Length: 254
Image 1 (tube, helix red, strand yellow):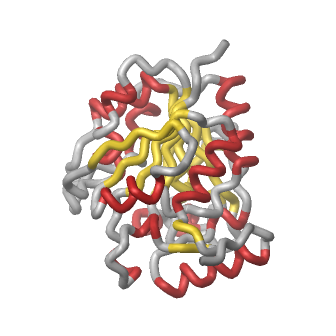
Image 2 (cartoon, one colour):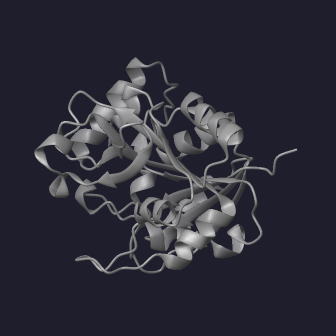
């Protein structure tokens, strides 16, 4: 029997552009704090054990989730030093973990359990060090492109600002959905550094670290188009709320 999968949900962001004092993950869509939809999708996909990384007003996040029946533990990211730094705070929960570990954003309420199940099934079959959940977009502007060799194997991610004209025409994009093999995640975190302009630790860099180290990294374009909808400002929040209502999500009224 395979070890139980673990989910790490990144929920420490302030969401400065949202013009709200609430942690971003608590802003409502369809009448519920958006993080609930992320946790629901993880539940349905078989990720029973969850770690939620909190930061800005983390007490509010804990309180909002206290009545869920999930097996949720919390860790605190006291400084906002990047996504890799957020996952570093979960070392205690990762210690000795042999199975799959998925890392997702708590502000992605359109995360689909069907996509997660496809990723988990592929992971169980292939056992890569890291499996990236990707999406093919007609208009990939602003997103990191997935690079593959002539045989179709993953060789890297290039951010748009660093991409050549040819690379910018690539439609397959990174959507920050990472399914790691537990020991490989710990190894990559140990080698992660913050030598960049922002001085932050980026989880994206783990793909390059593992690939350079000869560990198998794969990308699977199974995410649905709705999962590309992001929430970075109040207008996008309204757009996602509208899309979810149109898709038939249950609306909770006060």
